Image (cartoon, rainbow, N blue to C red; front, side, top):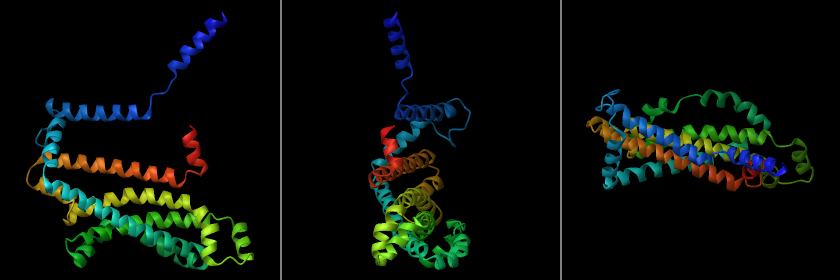
Length: 273
């Protein structure tokens, strides 16, 4: 009887074993590819607007064999990395300076709330006037969009510092840099990493948008060229590449978060679970 119960519970445990997340993710992608292949072949959409997925893959293989594609990919990655680095440096430094002085934070709060909702694409005419179709035009959009994501998170982090710890540091006559290093930075670091993760995704979106609209070098401009020349399959192939770049950026951002915050309770809970 006991062995029967034990056997039954063992089978139930095996039945309840969860499906790995990566397997579910692959299954979702497989379903999406199947729909993209079947919909045009079944006549649900016209192939000149949405070619079968196999045609996109074939066009992607053709693109991968050209130096133009790899040059465009490197231009996109370079613009994204430079823009994100500038935004990170400016957001962290200004966030700590503004958030560390209550008077300055109160004085600039309305200005930040006014500037932050302005969409970066509204700056395209200004960027074109200043830099034409050079990479700097898109860089301006990338820095502007990702800067606010990082700045706001750093402000939240500085505001979350324990007042008692701050007063204790002052009573021990810690200098400004020592206060930042020992009191503010450990509390603000999780917010900084969150800002980095949000800013990385926004920077990639604005990089592609800038290339697509302004015409600066990169994958976005190649998508516009393919669309203008009627190479629909190549256009979708480049869109797939942009999606893959976005997945890689997200994975790298998550890996950076796990490494930098491996001591944080939220990350430790994820590792344990």
